[in-house]
Image 1 (cartoon, rainbow, N blue to C red):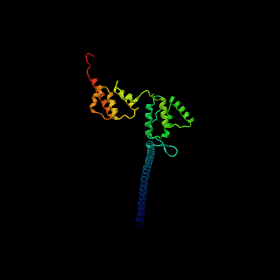
Image 2 (image 1 turned 90 degrees about the vertical axis):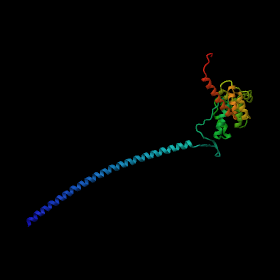
Image 3 (image 1 turned 90 degrees about the horizontal axis):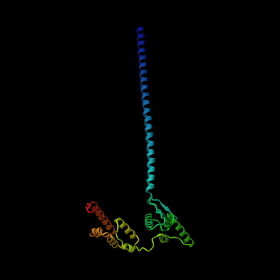
Image 4 (image 1 turned 180 degrees about the vertical axis):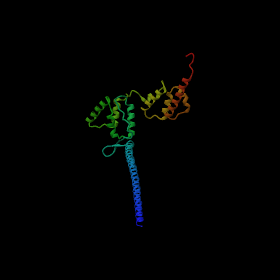
Length: 266
């Protein structure tokens, strides 16, 4: 019996040892698997962190760029006003690229027209017009202004925009030898229509008190007969309509001339 017990005990010990070894082997495999899983999670976590970091940087960059573009857009949309004493606007910069015309001393007719357009659009106060206009004088015109300003200052007088305009016109403008009303009433088309229209508008800008009916009649009466006869039936009521009709008729005549066959005798 003791021998059987010995063999049984030995068998049990061997079996337990194998079980322990098997458990240790299994535990080792589990630990290896856990290590591989942890390593995989670690790599995935690093990838996720890197991806999040990149997304954050991109988002911040886009936000900064959007902010800059918004600032630039605000600057473009803005209409800043230059203020003088009392907080009243000196002039409103409605259009950044709107340049004040320079003047050197030639015929000031067109210059005054552009200056008036600038003042009207910018809402320039009368008190600031002389300073703004005189700053853009060049050459002979600037020399004249320095003399005029000194002359008025010595007399204890200021130069208003009305005085400035009258003095400049008197110095550089056309003489009174030309009667613009008479010249306009006698105007005739001798060349192409564009030249006639340009001269008509030049004289029209210099006269006062002419009604639309008078302007239309004078314009029609000065046209070449082949143009006037072709549009008189439409009875234009405004100068704009008369000019538009005359241009269409002129283009029609030019096309007819270009398409007409050349005579053998020519």
